[in-house]
Length: 301
Image (tube, rainbow, N blue to C red; front, side):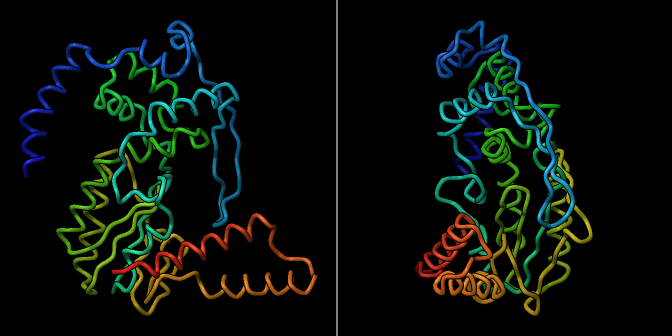
């Protein structure tokens, strides 16, 4: 309550006044952080090329790949402007110390797991929201516009830029707050992994579940997002295999049985001197997932 009062009485009027007067951290400070001259920063034009890759679940993912020079500048921006900023605890993707296990663990042993998916998440994170975010965290009008130019493409976050994942969490802090409050009102739990949104409830009450989906849809729509319908909206009850970011959460956190059997078969083939059906990188990745699951499962509480 105190935080809410301070926001209303102190922060919002000051933020409004600062925006009106054009106050805040300057282009000169931004140029210094990025090790550029002010003139070069003002005239820099990000460049991208288009690419498409097949999704594992079918369909095509369209990428906007920054040029080497653009990518190098974005990486400096990520390290020197964005790194120290705070994302919401419910945002589990792209954050240090958080992973798919953090995203899945809160939903273990729940009666119903609700999985929602945002349409075109990065492109739908519009440039005007990014600019408002940079103004809100203290950059002046010109610096915020330059930061937005450096991190957006065709009015959204480019899927392929190194800054897009972190910015998608930072700019959506307020959405995470609203969705977490929705979960608290409905006696549910909430996490988000990029565009994958998960709620879970202790009791199977269809009306409550429908209310969560409808309210989440309205909250996201206010901020320019749309939820997939039909097959990407999943309501998983106890008799289903409840998967959250690829992990089973029905009774305890675990890798799906089929994947565990596949990994055992691969390891057996390697021990007997035969060729594995996974690359060393894939095998190392899955071993890392198994270690994360074991560590999460052994945590108290």
